[in-house]
Image (cartoon, rainbow, N blue to C red; front, side):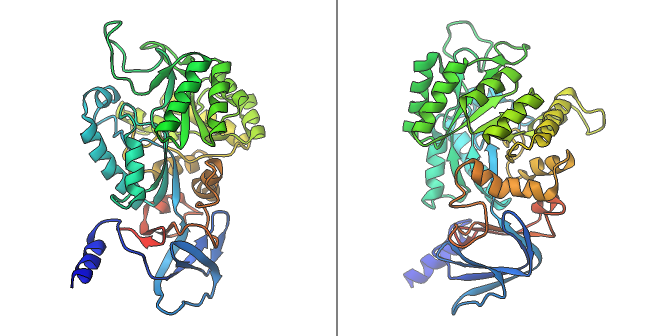
Length: 415
């Protein structure tokens, strides 16, 4: 009786389940991370993909899941999120950092993680807690242990910024004000900060190549070329990837020279910079949805001409496409609502990227850029069974990924 009661309880808990029986998924088509295959099926067992192809036989005891009209895709990967932030039209960034209790922010992040998972994003690269310390490490581990549902997480803990260059600002000089990131200065200081983040549990190191030194000022380079290079070497030596926030040409130039793995935002990129990124295989996360969301918060209704910030992000994206830079799908989610991650994908298609290429970027492309393509990002035997069924064909219109019909993570149907 007790065993039956526990099994029933596990089925009721959202996102949590015991080991699943083998499962044969039968959609209309399968997108394997690169191409579309009409009539394919996918067999899952023991949390892994066992086979993918036409006319698969279901083993004894397997659950057969018919998905008529649907496309089965790899679990999507959010490339730039902040689970410890929520939309700025609800609460400004400064107030979240300064006035929201850590327990409140963590509880909100748990809900955001579940919303992300159920939107079909089974992995998230979370690029900084923005004042919530190392709580992302605890959330990542709670998800891993099955305590709460959510995507598998790659966490950056506290992003690293140049001393005096981040925020919140506007207080009496000398007053200790909680910061949204860890401040560092000098080559030795940056290397020490990188190692502190790694020791605290960081999977990825995030550095700020530029930022606004004062209110109303334009962004300017902050870390020197030597500081960026030293921080990147320290992270790579420890087997971590490096993401760099940069919105200026100089910051991007220094980041490219340092050999980072991804550049975020990149609004000030030039054709030469994007060609250099392509030559080095540095992926670009354009975060189109962030500038779009902020413009809407400020009253823009979507009409043309768009606000200057939106036009800049579109122009940079076009230059990166022309240079054939590897594209990352990462919307800076948290600026806008978690669970609406597909907003970035829709904007990428609207701004000139084919639906098929956007879907590739959100799956196998992000997996490759983040060095996790040996585990997720594609549908092929041996990989983790992170799978999403969506109504329609997202390789023709990526908006179809909003119509999620089924989410499977580690071979278990999520609820």
